[in-house]
Length: 112
Length: 115
Image 1: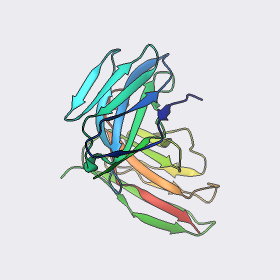
Image 2: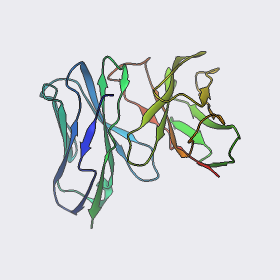
Image 3: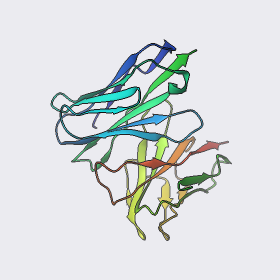
């Protein structure tokens, strides 16, 4: 069973704080890494799809990096806002599974 | 407005009953998926379909069945054989077949509770 670990499981920060969390995944047979944001009572929405080692992607205050050799990705949020409160899911695509394998998510709460 | 709709939002089932969860998309996407979420766990794949009239089992297909008679519709039936059906169910679609970089578009989910 392939293991995808996200840490921390939950995080509480103050508005304006910057934060980051980690996704660890098997590095062999790696094809792509997806990040999704899931706000309460809404559908998960795609943030990034990353494929290359050293890839960095940015969307507004949110950015992500990818290390395929060691099997991890970081998601950074600069100057967190209450609207960033959500569960952030990572999901690598590993070729011998032929599908996305979702981590359990990191739940972020940003207090005003 | 293109998107994925799931109905109902909440569903209650008595033990021994089959229930069907609806998933419809108007994105003209080829592939559709059903996931299950349980507390503290990642989304787990139940079934997927790459084209009409074809579908494949995912990791936890036992006790579930699906059909794909139309491109836009992928209903999931939770049968009485599913031992622990209480969970949150998400439907998703991707534009292409099944490729590693295809973004998944999700519906709002159905929460099923067995009484």
